[in-house]
Length: 122
Image 1 (cartoon, helix red, strand yellow):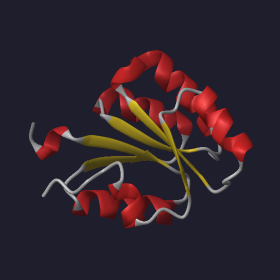
Image 2: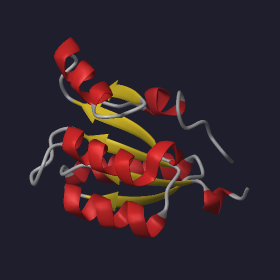
Image 3: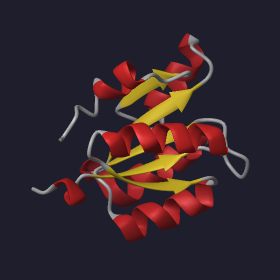
């Protein structure tokens, strides 16, 4: 599998966060597509067919838990879902897991926390 095959969709309504995380992932060899709304994320995942989606739980059109439920229903276990949240409480974690995510990461994300799930490919 070439590095072009390791596709990630990054979903966050904060442009600065998108730029930073996208740069970190691309630096480590991943191909990244960014979506800033849940609706755009559905389109991006359907078209781009990523292996993983990093989903912010606080999105403007509908929340990341609802998005995760829809993505899980459409793509099953073929898509790894990682919820990203600014809240580190047990309630948010449990809601995300109930929505079908595989992992929950708390903001701010660092290169080290990303590399737990996205080791360098290059």
